[in-house]
Image (cartoon, rainbow, N blue to C red; front, side, top):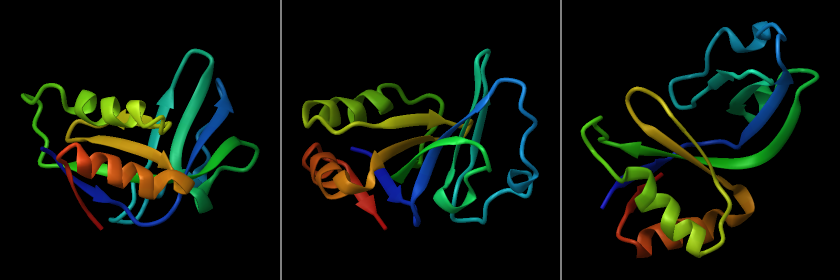
Length: 128
């Protein structure tokens, strides 16, 4: 069983072309209740941010909600599998990303209730 926190606000998954400078609107960082992820890839720059912080000119898929795994340690195994498996069975699409401290899971806002019910039925607890 995992504890998850539902973060406030809607998120966007964004794409900028490779080599694009990081927009200055993202360099100030999010507030203490939101998260921002930037990944440079060979073919793109992927950004996950609050929907109201989508960089100008970015291709964006909006209206996602973000769940953060609480109390995660690097010694834990099967964390994402325990979340992704039940959601895949329920056919809820997701986007995941990780930081040093924890894992994050994005679910479409329109499927949030279904995702929460599915994860709760799988034994996880969700706050927020």
